[in-house]
Image 1 (tube, rainbow, N blue to C red):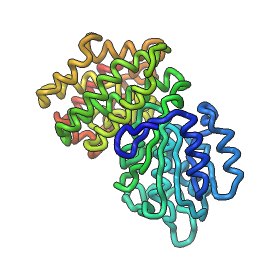
Image 2: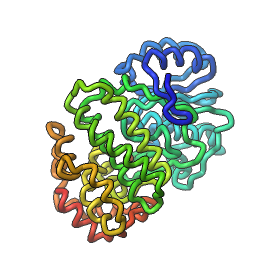
Image 3: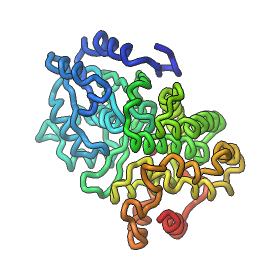
Length: 375
Ligand SMILES: [Fe+2]
């Protein structure tokens, strides 16, 4: 096991397996890991351990978790007094774990488990419980993308596809993170591409965010350079060594960058593309990346350093085409979106704390033009 940064370690699957057996399962644990954990060979261990007292395995939730997933998880946990939560999975598993940490023991007067309506209200009003002194939190990301393993927030999607919510509190950052490149080796190409593009967007948006600083820019450039080189290799089954490890480290580095800045216009515009038209998050953010980068040139003089990283590919757009070749054309029309849909998307594209974190202010007219060029 090697230390990557502070509380973040790189290890192989057998080291993680030993750690799970010896450490985590001697205490009361909630394990968040989707059924697809069989993909990384932990399902039999989890099944075996979940038969013991003291472990609850939550294995069924949506790829874009909603308030309903949170309610179902809280029901499964009930009054189980757990001391540790372990999330093994993509952003959805880690985000759902954060939701549990924020709302566990949140009770309405007449019932133990909050209703769907109450959960929505707690999320909107940021009315959480600080369980951090009682419950420790470990994350094992199995995609190289969301950076959720190092951020203090989680994304939840409205159960009626009407909004995107953030759960956000400083105590939601996992205390221990284990990066296991082998766990990402069997990711399907489409998921590799979309999660990798999400990580790229986090790094680029952190670079130009209003809230950026020189240390963030350094992390961003480190992540961007790695993703530009390694993501096209990962989606073409390259045999070059270390591809998956470098991508996992790059996504984590990108997470460390945007954990200090949050995201900007690309993410803000992406949210309705995901909850209204079901575009995978990474493709939804990458769709507008070239145009937003071009617009932001006027306010961020040193953006040239960032754009220079794409020079061998001829720019951001040709690089994106290389990554998405054989997976999906990166056009809104690929998801059935037409010009008639644009006004509705624009209405939902202005998320507070994201759009106003873009260095160049954008109007509804600007966003309309950006989206029309993405059709
Ligand atoms: Fe993202």
